[in-house]
Amino acid sequence: MASTQDIRRRIKSVRNTRKITKAMELVAGARLRRAQSRIEAMRPYADRMLELIAGTARASASVRGLPLLQRREVQTVAIVPLTGDRGLAGPFNAQVLREALRLQRQLRDEGKTVVWVGVGKKGISALRFRRYELAGQYQGFTDKPTYGDAQAISHKAAELFTEGTVDQVVVVYNQFVSPLVQRVTTQDVLPLPEHLLETDEAERAEDTLRGDFIFEPEPEEILERLLPVYVETQLYRALLESAASELGARMTAMRNASKNAGELIDRLTLSMNRARQAEITQEILEVVAGADALEA
Image (cartoon, rainbow, N blue to C red; front, side, top):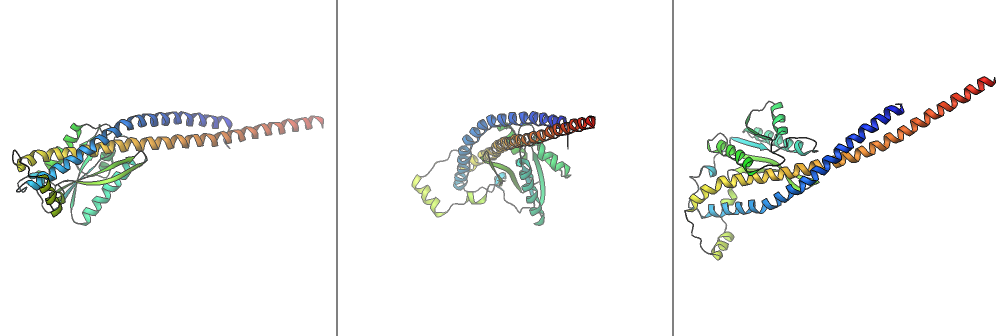
């Protein structure tokens, strides 16, 4: 059994660790509120941008000449996993990487090639450890992304797609549901999902009720200008979702760590009290034995 001094030293160490985890929980909670406000403000804008792109594409006579809408047989796929730059966030990073690697295995089984674009220090390190080559890597902003960061990633994705290096771009990230729930999401960014460009009878009737629109300039030209913005918007939304998810996961992980530290302190305190009682009992027995020896 460990001595009371050893147990007391360990209790002090665990208490210091609990102070750190509690502070990290409070910081993550404060930052989460701001991140949650940003993503809640971004979601309607991103949804409206998607509707605008779809409506303009349906009004266009032809979209075949637009590079970002080119559809070809998928031979090479770019996977963009969005991870964090730091750990201590529970399963946040692991579940994104697990889904990205599962998707890679599925694509390889289909005879397709995978190109990686790493976002976040943790994801980049994991991919490098597996000796995968990266077509692009971005880090240092995952906990507080800006629109400029989304532009840099989207420009790289668009470049790979338009040059024919890849035929499809897929983003894997954590969608923020609540501080306790982060849902892993796989989203096709390029090319634009085909169902958005199709118009069924109900949509035609709805467009007729709304009236005819006059596009100036032509819908094709408007669409050509909007498509890069659409890609940037979708990636910016994914970055904000990932940032909020990371903070929520970290807050939850630190809360659980603080709770576990408290339980460990209670167990160690109980062990220390038992050790002290055993030492006192042993001392009493030694005193009694010494007194009996003197009397004898």
